[in-house]
Amino acid sequence: MNTAIFLLLICFYLLIPALIIYVCYKFPSINKIGAVLLCYSAGITIGNIGILPEQAKSIQDISSNIAIILGLPMLLFTINIKTWFRLAGKALLAFTLECIAVVIVVFAGYLLIRHIIPDAWKIAGMLLGVYTGGTPNLAAIKEAFNVDSTTFVIVHTYDTVLSMVYIIFLVTIAQKLFLKFLPPFKVINNENEEDKNAKTGEDIRLYGDIFSKNILKNLVIALLLSIVVVAISLGIAGLLPNQYQTMVVILAVTTIAILLSLIPYVHNLKRTFQFGMYLIYIFCTIVGSMVNVDNIIHINIPLLFYVFLAIFGSLLVHGILCKIFSIDTDTYIITSVAGICSPPFVPVVADALHNKYILLSGITTGVIGYAIGNYLGITLGYVFSSI
Image 1: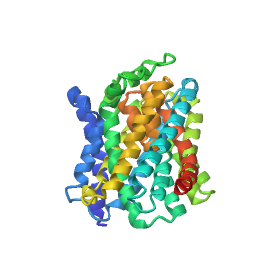
Image 2: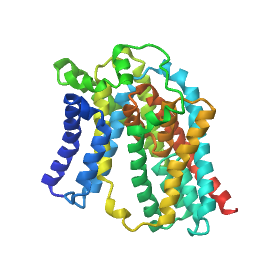
Image 3: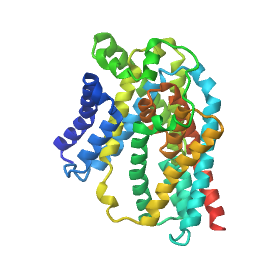
Image 4: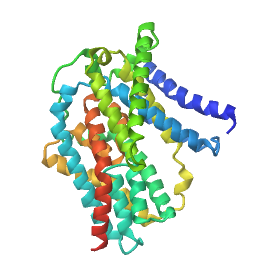
């Protein structure tokens, strides 16, 4: 790739989220739309107007991985582990209900399309894996079932596009809609004013002093700590087989960052959460630019329906189960994201919900999903094939 194009692409991914934060900071009316949705929109626009080079995908993959893996520790440095332990039981219950919902809906969909789609049980197994775990589980089950590459690419494309629609729904109207049926999230203990801001949606104002000397010093320290966390995590994951490395990296990053959050100096580094969210906004912009609208022009209707049903049907059934078990709205939404879209998207939705208390719940249950996704997908796929 031409060096100039490479640099321009990197600058775009770095500067567009910063510009969006600035606009949201200056204009409260635009802030109501949300930085997440604006970053996705900017990314989708740039990805589909024909100016990205063919070699852009390699930059997109690497850049999105760097943004999310460096952003996660900085978000976790600010969490209150005592508060999370009080929330953990309900989060685990909600995620269990999410897994049950996915199994119910994928099985129902399988019964509907098994005579239309060849080897539908293999598709069912992949959907079970990806919507309780993540993309690594989808790829692993593809290999386990020897799914042909064309089918895999189509399923992955539909999953990418519909998951984007799902995320946009969650960061816009979902919370207000589900609050009509589920109880609101309740803060368990009082924390400092900055933590309250994270719940009330005023955190965009905290970017106002981010370029002051003292804040910049804090952010440099936080970034260096984050790099150390990632380096250690990659080192640990490198000792294990490839199929486990993604799960282990996220698990190690989460664990080490939580341990560092117990150190008062690290926990109290100012604007670390905002810097972490800036990296998440970069991630959103990159992911948006990877959506290729042309790939869904020739639609396989039954397969598209099955993927749509798996995502939005499980969201509905999960909501009904959460209603029965009195799970609050934010916990329901974040555990749904943990299963349907995996841990990297948890901070995106937690920010849109203006609730950082649920961040660790979403990441933790998402990691659990990585661990069980292959077992569920492969085992139940074979069970479905015998029906």
